[in-house]
Length: 159
Image 1 (cartoon, one colour):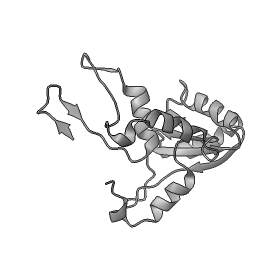
Image 2 (cartoon, one colour):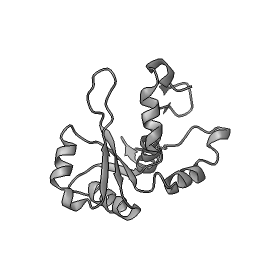
Image 3 (cartoon, helix red, strand yellow):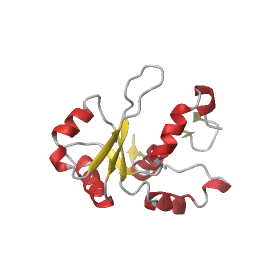
Image 4 (cartoon, helix red, strand yellow):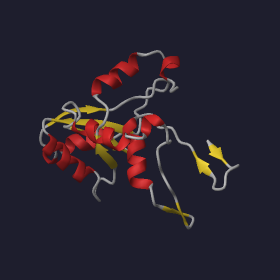
């Protein structure tokens, strides 16, 4: 949503997954766009005041510690990943969400590793110059994504 009736125009962007929103905050805040430094932040509400603490807790959650989120993946990502599997020790699962209507893979995925160390190493490789993906450690447990997929479309809309 573009809001122009303010001192400084601003956009409100809603992301499908928490990891994408957090990645935007971490990587886009302070970036120059047409000579203007942009500010990226969460909506300021009572629920988001302790958000940094909550994000750290979610990253440390035992179910998330070995999982990474990647953005910008292509249709051939899984193939390419499996061809380079020797670089990714301990890879247990590749979760490639699909769009409900089209059935096409979305442009993000989650990779589950046996250990935090393996996940951290893979994240460094995949966000490096050879792969050029954006990513971070996961915040949302896998069972939540499965649960959301099972909901009817009208129930999935944010409040």
